[in-house]
Image (cartoon, rainbow, N blue to C red):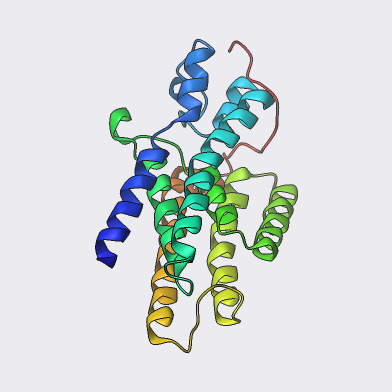
Length: 225
């Protein structure tokens, strides 16, 4: 039964993740955003190609398509599995990220998933964790001026902070309960998968960083678009 619940959570999340905000906004603006800039349909490319307003709208859309389903999952499972419900929230969030990154109707070529992952993290509703990760992300972006660097570091930091919070009893898991402990370990695996997927999607950025060819973060809209 619990395996079926996991599958349902993944599929429900995937369905929500298929809403490609960047592609929709680009079509309304008269362009295919995947044919401009980095060719990505996510927030950063929308920001660079179409400007701040577009970047904000795309971010909010990609954020909410995981945040809202995660809130619903939290509401449903908290009463059923009080010492393991965050595991199911993460399954829904991971499904949403997979839908965003690998949308079947776009040839499995979507965004990089950072905004959607952020929606999942906030959907966990752990205020201190959210604050810590936001500060770390903002600091990395301010210091490096590279969105890719800040995004990759954010995912690594998420795994570390999540593990620390779980081990110190600040999450729902009861580590003295074998079943809840296994649920925590499984949730850590999912958190690691989030990070690995994000790093994989940034492989081109990593190559450009190594070659000193990566563009620094800015709000300026590209000319001629």
